[in-house]
Length: 69
Image (cartoon, rainbow, N blue to C red):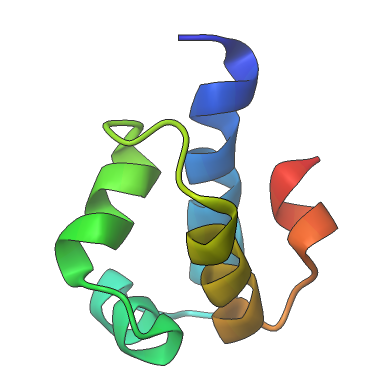
């Protein structure tokens, strides 16, 4: 697993925690399943689809670039 692949989950977790959101709240806000959020944050899903990342970015109120940089 490259650094880039494991970083997106860490970045999502960082923004989610800054907003004091639970994984469940993020899943609901992004219209995704809780297991999807858990897998992305844990690195089990290192390459989520761009559509999924966009939904998470929107739910967190950040740009897509913020999550993938």
